[in-house]
Amino acid sequence: MEFGYGIELQAMEMYNRNIFSKFMNELRATPRLSYKELEPQGHYEVWEKKNQVHSRHRTRKYIVVTDLTGGRDDYSCICSKFSKDGILCSHILKIMVETEVPKIPEKYIIERWRKKEKKMNQKILATSTETNDILRFNILSREATQLTSKGAKKDEAMQYLLEEFKRIGKNLENILSSTNTEPTEITAIAPPPAQENENTNESQLEYRQPLEDESNIQDPLTIKKKGRPEKPKRWKAMVEQEREKTKAKAKKKAKKAETSSKNLKLIQTQ
Image (tube, rainbow, N blue to C red; front, side, top):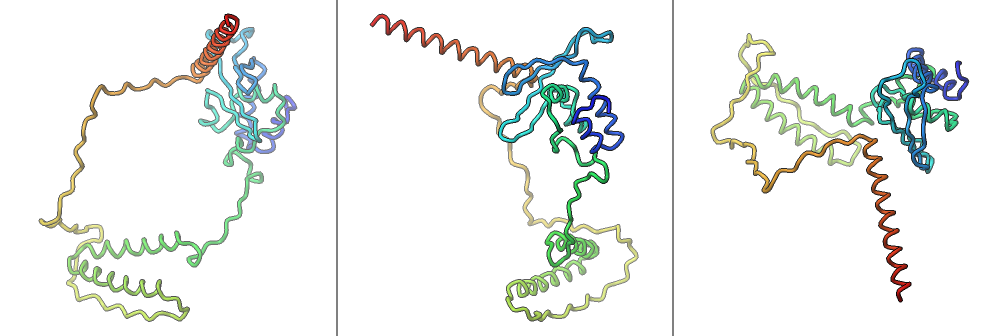
């Protein structure tokens, strides 16, 4: 351990070797950063110090928003490193170090970055066709796809499959509607009619041509909106959004002060 922080020990125990080295690169960058609290509710501004030998020509400031109310442990930064790489950025780590956060919240340690022995092993119950509807559906759909692909090769085979589907549907209704536990009698499947020898491959399927009386459904006509089209809204950065919020708050305070001064003048004149 280089710094002896609690978050460093937690990362060393939870992350694998490759991810831990990337995490340490972000943690090593925290001493080169400075921060300022914008609002007491958890808004911080983080930037790189200017007294360094290798400093950038233009200092960029990052906004870190935290929400620790009501048992929440939410951290977000405008650099969006966690959403891209799955690792907390140096700006959030700087705030954690300065506010003396003992541990990283579990939701910010992704499962795939953990060590094998530290993975959250969730017990997967053994599924069977008796309890799992999705498994039964997948098995039946696979078998039905194979039958329909064979039946589409010939009109005679298609008619045979349609008749069998109707018969199977009636038997299924009897099985599902019956409340008795006794086995339901199912009629035997009739053998398929004699077919001529086919030399075609299974991949060469004959598709049914649409009949003349079938309705040709087309897309509905689009109607243009009346008036001038709306202008696309420009995406605003988080810094700009915070500035607009502070301006709006200042305007509200000015309005309150103005109304209070007017009320005092009216009371004095009376």
